[in-house]
Structure formats: C-alpha cells, structure tokens
Length: 240
Image 1 (cartoon, one colour):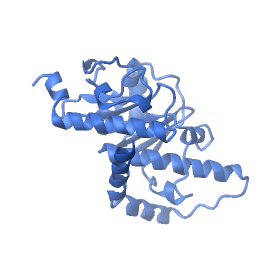
Image 2 (cartoon, rainbow, N blue to C red):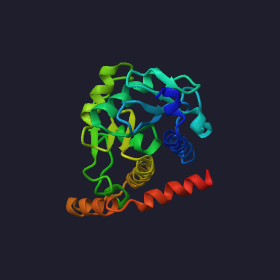
Image 3 (cartoon, rainbow, N blue to C red):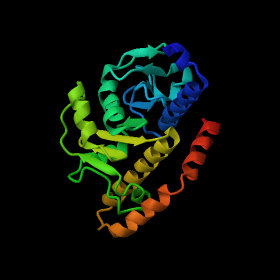
C-alpha cells in the first residue's frame, strides 16, 4: 500500500483528526508558542512513520488535512505542508528510543518556568494534580542549545527512557503516552500542577508537600482508570 493510501485510510484519518484537535486544544489552553513546538503520533503499523503538525501554522488553525506524515529520517511522505527540520530531532528520537507512540513537546509557561529553577521540575509530592506524575518524570538538567542535530535529540531521548514526562532544563517539557487523549490530558494537568506550584512559591510562604508513599498511591489511583481523560478529550472535540 502506498504512503498516500495509508495517509487517507480511516484509521490514519482518525489519528490526524485527534492530533489536530490536541493542537487546537493546546492553543485554547494557552500552551502554544507562536508557530513553534510540535505534537506527533506514530502510526500503529510498526513502520516508524508518524504524523506531525506542519511548519508555519498556528496550532489554533491546524485541521486534520494540515497534518503531515513523515518517516524516521524526517522525509515528508504525505501532506501538503512543509516540515520544520528541527521538529524531527526530538520527536524521531523519542519515538524510536523511548518507544512512545505520542510525543508532545511544548514551552508552556508554568512548566517551563520550573525548568528555570534549581530543582528544574515539578515537585510530585506537593499538590494532588502533581501526584499523578510521581515516578513518571525525568529531568534533563543540562541545557545544550537548540536541538539542531540528531545527536541532541538522541541525548534527550536517552535521558527520558522509562519516563512519560521530561523536564528539559532552561527549555520546556516533553509529555508522552500510548494514546493522544491520555497524553493530552497529562499535558494539560501537568501545566495546571506547575501553575499551582509557581503560585504557591510566589507567596513566599513555606510549602507543605505530602510523603512519597501517599504521592505514589495517588498516582496509581489516577492512572488506574483513565475514563476521565477520555471524557475530557471528547468534551474538547464537542467544543473546539
């Protein structure tokens, strides 16, 4: 089967629609930055091909027909728009090295603010929203400039093997998942948890985290049933 026929198959059309919805939702929730950053989702056929938002479009305007298909080398296989070369270096490496189907990379404000601190990341014992990420995060403490080559993307990817969320020091975050709706739910609530922490820290008052065992249990409770994540994405589909 050709790339074009794969691209227009019902299964891939559904993935394109979901990816476009996630991008519009991120814009709606204030998580976008100009025409930068990217969301990607791998085709479920094991080919290593994945879908990606195109170069030059605001996230709020992306529709299913704007999504492009690329291979692991960054070659555009289908779609009418160009691909930003730098998009490939992080996304291709995370898909390949971390075996993650959905990869969301943003410079969303509150999460990025925490990457600028000495801790570099969210405290997963501080708020109920943060506890869902207990044991699921990696921290890349050493900013190494723009990801302009495959080596930098692979360095980032190797550092986040086994994690669903990576805080990239002085840079932004990467959120991954097996499904677009689950990954977007994590992205949204990650930013909310980071916002709560930044606001709490801004009061200058001492913070009161809970113990690690309780945080671990709350994470298990949250991830044990993801219907709420799916309902959230369905609500976004109705309203956006």
